[in-house]
Length: 288
Image (cartoon, rainbow, N blue to C red; front, side):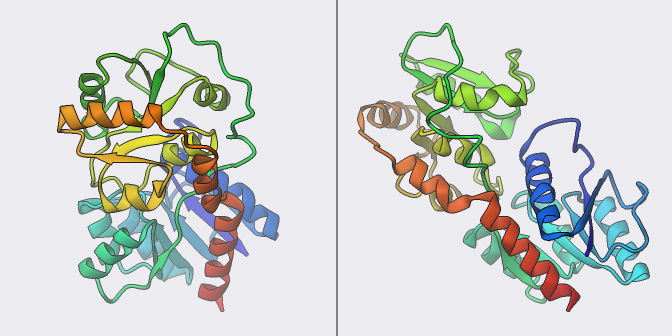
């Protein structure tokens, strides 16, 4: 089967959507699929492609739908954009399948367009790359160290973490923070820290970094919303990050709890290998 991914920034940055494309495309090749990655539908997509998997939105996804109709291909849209106008448009383009990453997102998508085929397949994590036995990177910060990995953007709300973590070292990693690590160094960064905190907006569709942190053995303090609760389960604490006092209390509590292997066990539910199998089965179903 010939499968084309549409991902404008793949190969340029390493955010969640780009990680999704890299990890999934690599594993789908193991099922003998011919897989290619393109910026958009006009970026030399083979006319014989049978499945288009798009992480792009807005005009790009409209053009991808028209291309699929013209060439007899099936369009899968992965809901990486979050609970907002981009994925609303994606749903009203009427893809052959819209992949919701959580139960909550699937329910949201069905309310937006009840006539679209909604399939739940979460994002994942490479359990070999991210694990507690990785040698920690040497970081010159006083323990305990609270880690946040995300672009420095308003919806990631790192400012709320900095307000709450008054007595701790905080390591911010991501574009815009002025502190860079290579993608290959990140497994070593996770194991060098003591706690992962992610006070993201409730509109965010997932947060692969949560899985990477838990796979590395880190407990999590994150936003109390249905999406984060589904991802983190019993491997962390949930809080309203805008309540600074409650956020500070949760950080203190999380550092005192003996989490054992709960974070790793929770992350193991999201193996990229099992998720690639679900996409393989979805592609087969659409073609048949």
